[in-house]
Image 1: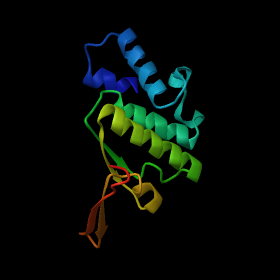
Image 2: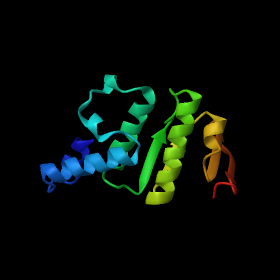
Image 3: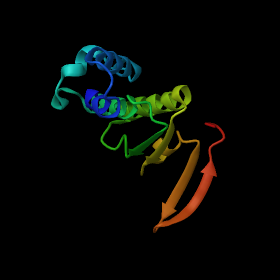
Length: 129
């Protein structure tokens, strides 16, 4: 997570970078004490949370997520989608997501379905929007 800050915000001091890492870990529901763990020490759901933290630590306006729940069980899928929904609302983060899972697509405000390389449908989910 910190590496992205070194690259995109090089003027931050080490303490400022550490503070941002702690804040973003809390934001995605991880204990800040986990910041020095190796990837294999995290569960699949935790790894997704770390990936999301890495993606949002610099506060982008757009997040592109390719199958963000593809390797997760149903409960972790719901947790990650709730997290992405919250980040969309709280940060004003636009999320463009690719998924093959219909239940995951239901979280989207807008769904564009492709078939054989062409747009098959483009619809708004009024219950989410």
